[in-house]
Structures are given as structure tokens and as C-alpha cells.
Image (cartoon, rainbow, N blue to C red; front, side):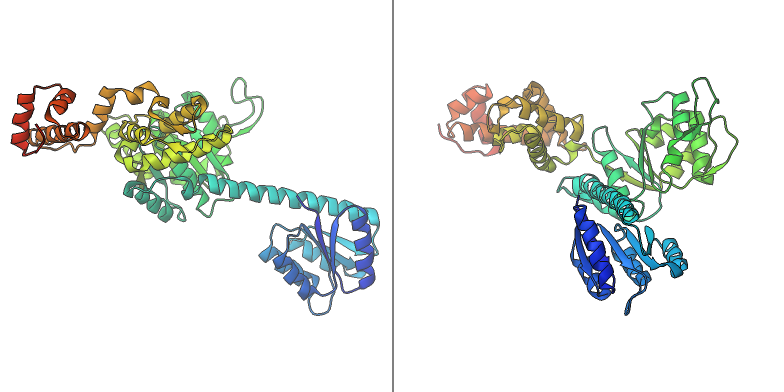
Length: 458
């Protein structure tokens, strides 16, 4: 973090004195007598603190403050004023000035105030960098894939993000539901406020209620202090309830009331607390089936299902697998200081054909395993875990690519013809070699060749 300080004062003596005091402390100082020039300098330079006189020709310290607050809100502004105009300095403080200093000033007072202003400025910069990092990590750009299915997800998330609507994200485990929730938060006008995540399945009902609503001191054994719940902690921001299909019935009732009335009471308390949060919920269950079975409240379902974003399983967007695999390869190669440049075509074929019951999360774990265990610069088939190289698993994955409604006889014939053509291609179109690959007699192969009108050498 820098220590760049700009001083603005039309009285050159004060400029020289302040510049000398601050530079002696090791700060980098730019002293400017022209406020308009100073504004241009601020717009073009990295500055940590501004110190400005209140009364100057052409532009007042109040106007300097307003410009900085509008265009560079992270920069603290200190106001200098003569003793007789302290009331103006007080008004400036109300407008957002960090501090004011009366002329003539004591050196120690100036240095103490500057140190505090720099500390605040550095904290603001760290927070800004953190927000930018989170935006990069959790924004829409972090959701990887070129398939139409995933692009539709991104389009819908982009449309709903600026609104206040409740969002229900559905999909199998490992598809990236929390990543979508965070992307919605980062793209919303609540991005500067907290993103609070709760996994509803990881907490037993008693603990879950206390986590959500908070509790008063002494409300139960072990409640030695007041605790604010997740509803309060998400104030002004986004609350993400993962695995919401696991909520017990009594908690479903209380959540419904919160969504309807936007008020809560802590466990053991009587005070009504107004809460303001945007809810994003996620589940890998079919909530409509849960409603039909009596396990989930219908009225709560409709409150949650204002906008539904469904994340497809990885097996339904196989064209994204090579892209995702390459992304994870770069990530884990950097983390482990490995120089691994890509995958062989065979490895990509196996990755693309696998069923991926654990979806993107499983793919990520597999690529990390490959990076850690390989001794080569390219990931090959032999680097993949055994379950990905199992022929029965691979065949099941290939079958999963077929539509559910098919003409079985016609489909089987198409598969048989395709297998024969592949065997012929690998055997130089020599019938006897192709028959060996298919483990059939030459006469049976010749019958199939005639049936499917495929030509081959004798």
C-alpha cells in the first residue's frame, strides 16, 4: 500500500511547511496551490489521502470534498481551516470529511490525523481489492462453459441479478449452484454487502434455528451471550440457503413468515427485528415432488420459486468438459508448481465420455488427482483414475447420450453399423481383421456388411 498524500492550499507557506513535515515522516507528498489542477491530478494518479484548505479562490475546500467523494470515495479528505471558521469544518465533517485541522496547527496533531487517514485508506483499498477478487472468482465469468445450456443459465442469472426477486437454483450435487448464487450477488446492487451462506443439511434442526434467527443470552443452556443469526448478518446483502429441501417442517413455517413479513425474533427474545436481504435458495431435490409427498410446504415453494435457474448435469453438456478440464488443469498446475501443458486426445475422449455422477465437482477432483500424481507434461489415459477407464462405465455413458424416446430396433442397427465401420477403419478395411476385433466370424461379418451396404476388402 502506498503513502501518497496530496496537499491543496493557495497559501504557499502552509504548503511548504506541511510538505516538509510529512516528507520527514517518509510520506510521498504532492503540494498544489491550484485546486482545479489538483482535481485533474487526482483523476490521473494513485492518491491515498487529500489535505485541503477550506477557503481558496476559484474552488472551496467543500467543493474539493464533494469532487473526491463523488469520483474517489475511497480517499479520505482532511480539511484545514482558520480558527474562526470551524463551523464550516464541522459542516464538511457532516458531508463526509475524515477530519479537520485548525490553523495554526501542531505538528503532532497533523501527523496523528494523517496516520489514521492512511490506515483507513489502506483498509478501503484492501476491501476494494478483495471485492474485485471476489467478483473475478465468483462473477459470471467464473462459470465456465460454451454450451447453450450453460449460456442460458448465465443469461437468466444476468437478468435476475439487478432485481430483488427470490431465486431458486436447482440441479444435481456438484453442478455449481452456490457459484451461481454468488455470481447473482456480485452482479447485484447488494454486492458491497455480505453474502451469507447456510447449508441446511449440515445442521440439526435445533442448531439450524439458532443459526438462522440468532438467540438471546440465556435463552438455552450454553447461550452465554447474544448471537445474531444469519438473517441479521445478511442485512442489506444476500442470504444463500443451500439444500433448502432439507428444512424441517417447523423451520419451513418460520422461514415463510420471514419472507412474508421481513421480520424475525431471536430465539428466546421478544424484540421484533426488521431484516432486509435477498434470498437465493438451492436444492438438488424436486420440490414439486416433495410438496406432493407432503414433505415441503406448497406456499413456501411458491415463495421460493419466483425465478428458477436450473443447472444441467455435466453429462448433458459434454461439450463443456474439455473446456472445464483445461481450466482445472491450469489451476492445479499453478497451485502445485507443475508444468503440465494439456491432455492427449485419448484422455479427452475418456473424460468426455464419462457419466460424471458428481458433475463439475467430481471433474475438478479428478483433474487435481491427475496433476498431483502424473510425472509427465501431458495428461494421458493412464493418468486417469480406473473408474474412468472402465469399459462398462464408458458404454453406459455412451448410452446416456441417446434420447429416452427411441426406436430400439433401428437404434441397435445404427450402433451395430457404426461399430462395424469403426472396426474396419482400425483394421485397414480388411474383413478378417475387423471380424477379430468384433469377435465374430468372417461369414457373419460379411452378412452384416451386405445388410448395411458397407464395402470392405476380402
